[in-house]
Length: 169
Image (cartoon, rainbow, N blue to C red; front, side, top):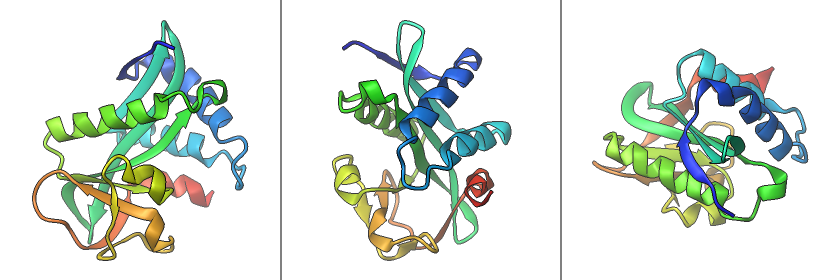
């Protein structure tokens, strides 16, 4: 299957919502919080990087990157997620391609690193590593990983953008 990866356009927003809702429809929480998170990040101007995988004009996948703070400070770090791929196109490399492209663009834009909350075995393939010195409060430690692009590895409490508070709604 062929697809291109590019930054989202305003005309993609409805398709991104549909893809994200479909991708997480079977999740155990089933609350569709991922759609609310992406919308909240976009509304706050906090989608630092919002990439879509498209075939012609059809959105097949989406990856969001937004700023995080460490110990309350902006240190040039970002959080990956949510990442969603339309169910009928999953396991075909779209998610991996979106993540690789996003990480590459963050590096090119002088980011210092990226964190992710997710399956450790999956995210290790991108270079993410669990670091017990970097903490996301209330989450299982092994599922929170970092990828340092430049500088030293940070330590302390990480806070995602308040757009992630959509999880509490």
